Image 1 (cartoon, rainbow, N blue to C red):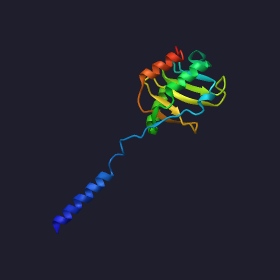
Image 2 (spheres, rainbow, N blue to C red):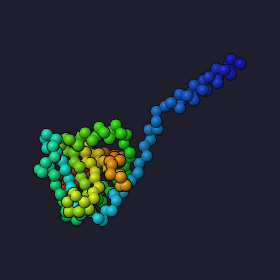
Image 3 (cartoon, rainbow, N blue to C red):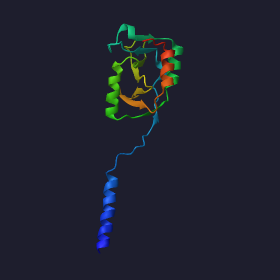
Image 4 (spheres, one colour):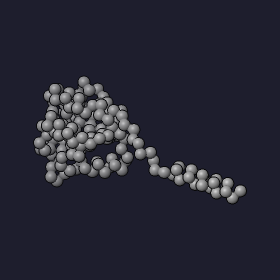
Length: 159
């Protein structure tokens, strides 16, 4: 009888311990689809200076349609994940550092029209706006330094 109690105790202990484990480490990825890709008329790029302030010298508007389409081709359908809120908050602080950029696709020739935003970090991480909501919901599944450099070159970002 005691051996049954001991066996039952061990099985229940293992069950409780396994149920209290950390959350699933596998992260589901999906492809981000930038909405209405044919409607964008400009790209707005904003960086910061040495003091972490965005100025006229650290912003640029691109209206060349070929450049806009090439940019969209580079980032559209990228594999993304939903970041943990702590990770997202920590990375948002990095926008105040030189080399990180807010890039917005706008449906008008200036940023006043409806836009779709992305944050490009110098470590190769890209944050994407949710295509339905106006919040930053997705982060690139992989850091891609080559893409970061390609985008800087394509958009001729010198700041």
